[in-house]
Length: 173
View 1 (cartoon, rainbow, N blue to C red):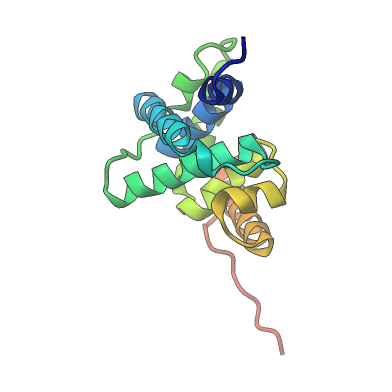
View 2 (cartoon, rainbow, N blue to C red):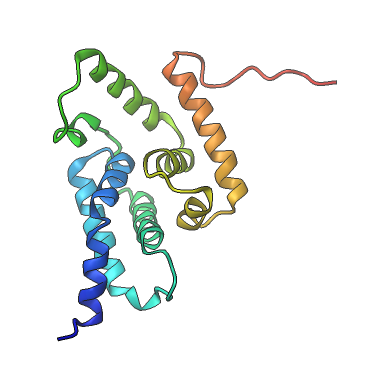
């Protein structure tokens, strides 16, 4: 018996739910809002599955759908900005107290990044997407991904080291 196309699509999409949830938690900062975001994104993807072209990377397409849902929610002020990475890591071995402080600091530094930089840092750093995949998800040129990633990493590094967020610019003659 052959499964209906929507059942096949749903089965394929299911394998990406943990990655979608991880990215959604980092974006929203709230496990409950993240779960809602993933559910909304998967619902939209199921409804719009006819738009998925043959040969398209399903993972990148699902991340694109979720990113667009998130942007729409942010625009309508439906998503809170508090982040609790400790909750996201509750199912992992408990870190030492110094590790918890580093996680808290990283969490705060990630939230201090502009949304555009945070999204690229999370997609490339956390989800291990290529620049090309991240560019497709965010619907921007690869060069934009590279510059946002560079600026985001530098700003994140400075925040983690307790340095001022903006670097001193040198005058070049």
